[in-house]
Amino acid sequence: MNQKNTNNANAHDALPPHADVGIKINIAIAIAIAIATPIPVGISTPIPVPIVPPPPRPPVPRRRRPPPRPPRLRRLPGRPLRRQVHRHRLPRLHRCRPPRLRRPVALRPRHVPLHPPPRVAAAPHRRLPPPRQARLRPRRPPRRLARPARPAPPGFPPPRAGAFAALWLWNPMVAAISARGSCEGLLGVLTAALVWAVEARRVGLAGAVLGLAVHFKIYPFIWAGAVVWWMDRERMGGPRAGPAAAPEEPASLGALVRGFVSPDRMKLAAVSLATFMGLNALMYSVYGTPFLTHTFLHHVSRIDHRHNFSPYNTLLYLTSAEPASSLRAESLAFLPQLLLSCVLIPFVLAKKDLATSMMAQTLAFVTFNKVCTSQYFLWYMIFLPLYLPGSTLLRKPAVGVSALVLWIAAQAAWLQQGYQLEFLGRSTFFPGLWAASLAFFLVNCWILGIIICDGAVTHDKLHVE
Image (cartoon, rainbow, N blue to C red; front, side):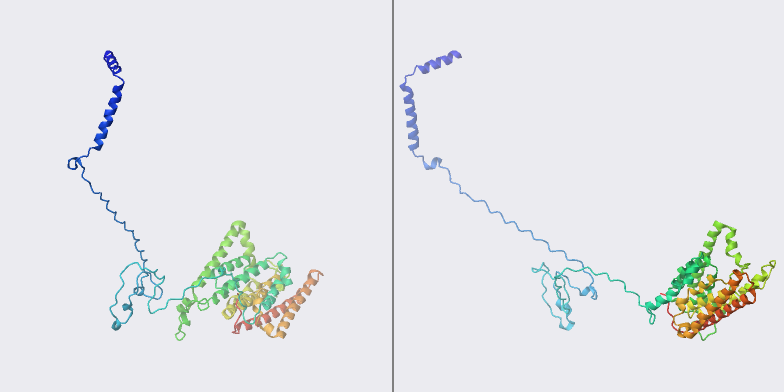
């Protein structure tokens, strides 16, 4: 193989130099002849193909927004549902006309209107409200007005009410007795709270205060009858029943009982009794039998002949040296006392004026009690601001001044006899001390008669607010 390639190379090298030039010339001549020679048409001429432009693309239709979904119909105030008009539909006028004037009206097809729909569509026979104008100034928050003070009752201005309240609040006698170890000030608060709760028709609170007051002192139980008698159906806001509903028919005993027993009275009795017994049970669990002895049993056999304004003072002093017997005359002193303070006075005065009735009951209880000391005077003095407005003691100054002077003079006479007995050692039990006690008893009875007469008169009383 190598030998063959060597031979070809030797042969190429053996050609003359002008042979290569001749070959190039021949090739150029052949190319020129081929270009100049025309080609016949029918033999190899290609068929012209027309250029067809591509078909235009169809325009893509714009996607139309669906009409907004109409809201649900709602009942407008004062208009029936069938009379309401759709907010995207014109009202059908022919339905609003009378039947004889109805005409066929071409209705507009249901489509989205070009103009914006009205915000509120109303019936044609009603006028649309005028457009609400924008506020130029920002809305201010409403001011919280102060609660107006409750107007005072007619003829009883606040300065005068404060003057009557000062009879208790600024009384030096009240301050001196309340500061010497007794709880008369707290009892005065409970008394005022009881009157307010009953006048305000808060039966449960009144029962709780009454039970607490009786637990502090025994004597407030005398007010229970007056409060129960005052709380009739007409005053407490309930229907009247019993004999008052039919006065022409004779009332039987059962009708009277049914008319007396009311839910408010039962509630007052239950709450007051539960409060009283609960506090007593608590104190008994703490102190035991001495609590019962010094709280309740002591008053049955009590013999107190010192600092006693009662007419029973001399009798208690004379019988204190004798051995205790089963029955004594002073042991029956509670009979006229309870009959007057718990039955007669509340039956006559309670429904006319509760505060006056309670004051008369307390004054009668203290006056007829076999033991009467200075702290007992505060029991009925708490009612003075409620009783004095419109009373005879103020309407007739002579009567009021006479009552005050006699009440102070009787006490001064008794204190003068007590000074001779206690400090000078003189025996003034009889007749000096006993006569002074009897004079003080008669003055209290006269003042009690004035209070009962004032309470029995039917006139408008100022309620506790």
